Figure 1 (cartoon, protein in one colour):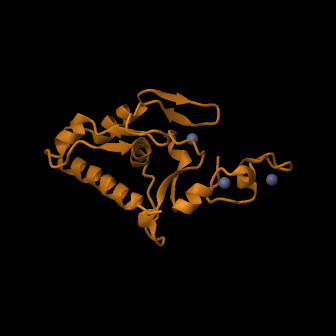
Figure 2 (spheres, helix red, strand yellow; figure 1 turned 30 degrees about the vertical axis):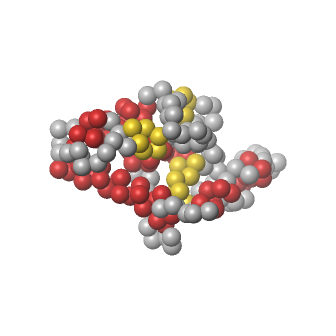
Length: 164
Ligand SMILES: [Zn+2]
Ligand SMILES: [Zn+2]
Ligand SMILES: [Zn+2]
């Protein structure tokens, strides 16, 4: 399986937003993204904030959102209109960044600690390797410890940060 440079592409997106905001102050980029992101969200009892945005290009998992026209305009038509994963927007708005001191960070994925693909709660997001991402949520992580009543992942430090 080919590994893709998710985190590297995310940092390009993130830095683009910072750069655009610095050269242009008429549009408050974070506000535009925040409004676009929070349309049709549903909060669950487990603390997830799930996006109900429909994405017909995305069959399952992390839905994506078109770049709002106000932000496309700032690019001076240098980029084509593209879609960005909704989790990237949450990460951008809350400064959830990959640790660039870690080996191979460029290939990290934006992982859901809650394993809910359309969740945009920034506290449920972290950058980590594809293999760590894929190992989340398997049986034992979500078992409730009989001693402390927390999920075993938390109690036994199976993942860092632990699954929620
Ligand atoms: Zn969640
Ligand atoms: Zn325990
Ligand atoms: Zn876990």
